[in-house]
Length: 347
Ligand code: TXA
Ligand code: MG
Image (cartoon, rainbow, N blue to C red; front, side, top):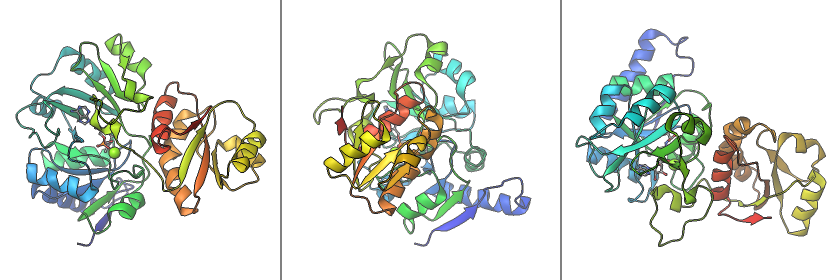
């Protein structure tokens, strides 16, 4: 299979006829049970018709994804929400009005329209209404809810550009829509409304504080900042897998070390590269990459996955990385870094 790439970067500058063609082609493929790579504001997704179990199976095959890791269903209006969930509580409508379209996924009771393959046998479904114009248009053109995980090979960092998608999936999917670099850079916040108290399963751009302003108390699942044991029952199966990992072995450094102190530790312990905050860079003499400023968690999130991929492009083997503060969007950055580092931390 050869992968076709459609540039939809500047939607408004695109010839309306050409634009129509790109979306019509994506919609045809989805309706025919194929998979399509597409941009969202968080990361790129790999989409298929969420109501078609054979199409959904192709997502798992293309990614090499474990069968017990459920997918998020992407919608483009409130009718689709009511189609994919068997019931929609008042809290879900409140979240819809506060954050959708946007980088939030809500777990609800699964509706009959969604086969169990999507949810890996769970009786719940993860629902998200993305904000990216290309994503919204593609779902509307397809006319069906779109199941989509991040468009990377399972285990590698999520893709934030069409080039990342092609690096992982070229030849394994028929079409990728290019919508430019993803604005958020980390996957959506996942919150479940299927527990007594709403519970955060994965942190993202929508923060715990923002959720609590709408929902009242929100519990943070243990898996957000702690390693899940192999045999432990998990609320969100995706949390037990090693994720986002570059080939280089990453270790996180806690505390307020100066760049010089960090380098000393790195040299003593045989690290060959650093991943540091932007302001550290001028004082680092050993090879390094940066991932945003210390006080700018949104910028860290936006550049994180690209930086993790770049570590491998540079050929680093053993990398020491700054640990950001786990507040606000920083909680999402720390959550991804801990998994990328397989929870290796120097206190
Ligand atoms: O931003 C995003 O959410 C991106 C874009 C493409 O929308 N998608 C994404 O999908 O990150 P994925 O498959 O990489 O992550 C989905 C996460 C996994 O951790 C999975 O276990 C969890 O959501 N999940 C999906 N359905 C669930 C369910 N019914 N109950 C609990 N967790 C669920
Ligand atoms: Mg993923």
